Length: 219
Image (tube, rainbow, N blue to C red; front, side, top):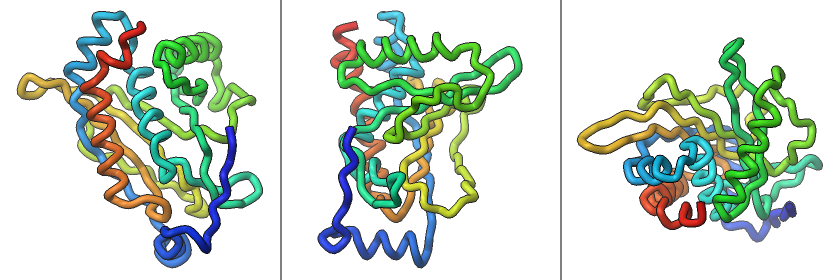
């Protein structure tokens, strides 16, 4: 992983970044349904879990665009990671708590899926919020609320407002008009991306869901 500093004086986004970080500091969230009809059928035929497939799709889209990989590093420099991996939550049924773990991203889904399975096996009985002390800094959060089919979701993050990476939350899917629709919310910082970038993100996620047969071919 490499962190690439941004030269503010040569960055086209500089006035937007300064406005939405220093003058009107804000994040925004967008929720949309992803049609997973074809994807779910393909996953079922191969005996593959839905949650890691969705995490893979999200990470694939994130890694295509520096806007979703832009952040401050541990030294306070603004830049972007050349590659990101997902951090994601797993639920503990026994006491209704969860842990946040991670798996290294691999462009080949089969390799990523194996890493996901290994991580969940290792920490399935962990009863702490962050059980893996080795999680690298180039991760971003993904979580799921599979009990609720929401139409909107917003995280109220009470800190300095300088967390720039996207945060994803997926909900319970539903059947409607012969389709299976899954709500997905993306929490984004306006300093590094706009509604246009969010639109591109959701468009690409829908394309990945429709093209599951292609990236699942080696399973």
